Image (cartoon, rainbow, N blue to C red):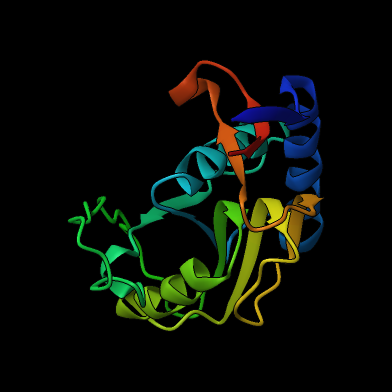
Length: 179
């Protein structure tokens, strides 16, 4: 197994600030916008963006929720290994709000399709956008594209993109892993 660094800590920080600025350009004060981190790995990115927007760009408090898509996945019953669900935490109404789904890596698009189904349990958003740190553009099974992307990566199917966050893994780094 070999690893190649795609993004180091400094590059991740730069990308996070760029993504935060792009969100501000479109959503200004976030009065009708909510961030939804897709469990499990999108939560770290969503929390970091919220922190940057509020502390460094002085955006008023932004609503942030976490969405578990485990039981909405189309491969839910196709594995013999039991799936462990995460907690959904959405303590606000999404009805007529602009929702920004946040995930670390966009691969096949199936997780986002699951998230589109799952969010309907909380109301009907006026708009849904997608923000990802890494877009694996040649791996899509569904016609889903991000509205905001940190970096586009051309990885072939046996390669994995591994995102590490300092809150969980001790450092901010993105690796391309080859088996």
